[in-house]
Length: 273
Image (cartoon, rainbow, N blue to C red; front, side, top):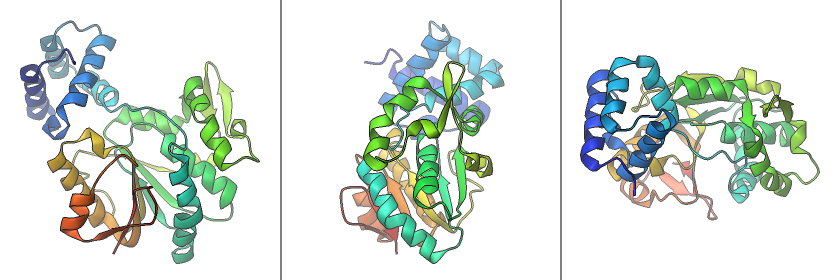
């Protein structure tokens, strides 16, 4: 069980909304409480009221807070069967319909999915171009992803997935040692559009051909999941693709809105109609 209680969580949410206009009541309470416990541990804050004081008094600390509570596991080519479906079915369709399709990674906490896509494009579609954007709540997330620096363990954790998809290539061709870490070396990283977003995705561009929102909806309560899906699908162009995690279920949204169809297979990949 998380150490932060429900009443303490509600006070933290109230303070953040009042001070910074971020409404974290849309998050699923249990994982948010665990994330807050992690922040308090990392910053040697013994009681939730100490966290509240830091949030109120230090805007830089709040940026660190946004970064830490949004963290998720880093795994290159997570669920490789999904990435194989993207390679064999989705990307050829995108490039057939547009010389430079727009691709968006919303609410990103790390660069695992972005780096995976860039490697796939380099190895399987070297003569194709895409306009790629990545947005995040946290400026720190954006800075870390754009730097290309990842930990040794993160790279090693994706090695088996990479080998399943690219048995004739080496992951080390993309990641070079950088001190105690690794650096993602694909030059296309410099062309990515990195965007600071808010919880309501205000200011995001529409007409996107593919949105990769994998394993992010699980962070939110059901009502807000539906709000996010409404916003996301409104920005997706007809015929565009929405890709979510294989353990995420949006069937109720699909049934009620009738603007998405699920493609064949277990990959949780949808097409806007």
